[in-house]
Length: 367
Ligand code: G6P
Image (cartoon, rainbow, N blue to C red):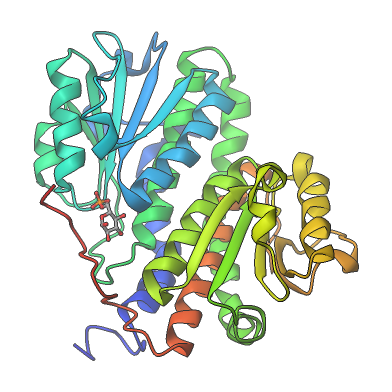
């Protein structure tokens, strides 16, 4: 097992480091002449045309990749997208039928609830697309079409590299739907795919955070309960960051849309409670910073995650993690790495079983 870990202390850390490569393996073959291309997946050209409604269904981390996907598809293609937890979708008599596109996302391709949701969507006449990591898995076999992510095998129970490549596929799908829907032009799309391909480099740079994050985590997260906050894409990422902390370090962690704090959760802020704020989205950054000041005024200890070039009032944060420069829509790829490292080092420092957290399974094949 030590050999399989390739010199890393844990599979999780190894898999965190494998992300830039997994990202390239997934994205490069899906870009042709600067545009998204799904020929290798044998998806017919017209599959993405005339879509008026899209549903994304998944569980756990895959569902949060879907939440990022919703933001990107709505941003680039202006098509309304709903995201459902598969275990809810299958029992909620979903409003779906012919002409609708249902995208199921799953690393293993074997999650029982996701498979059941796929079967239901098919039975109701929807067109289905799987975004799957394991070749030949049940969901891959049953979906009308499949786009494979190329994360390679993920051994650690908590998902890392599968998540970033799922987001990458959602990005490509958002661009493809945007082109087909006439919402983005090929030139604009080429510039976006260039920037997407460059995320391999920003992800490599973000791995340098392994030098600073352990110390920050030790000082900033020393409380059994904490909040993650963010807006827009940062909210979707906060949900995933919070899940990672729960899974690995058994801390009570909640993720909130930063603007919702004042509608309840702020009453839970007590002296020294950590609040991790993701603020990578420029338009809403001042709003999130003002939420940080609100919680800090009530005693919270704040950790800001933002671009390295960002000027933020020093009185808004106690600790700060800087991410490499990229346009807003590309920030999730490096923000994910920062959050994975926070959860990883917290779990290591607390003596938790990082690769096999208690009560969790890599693939949940029972309901
Ligand atoms: C389990 C795993 C999670 C994963 C979820 C969905 O709960 O512990 O890490 O996100 O299943 O798995 P899937 O294979 O469908 O992506």
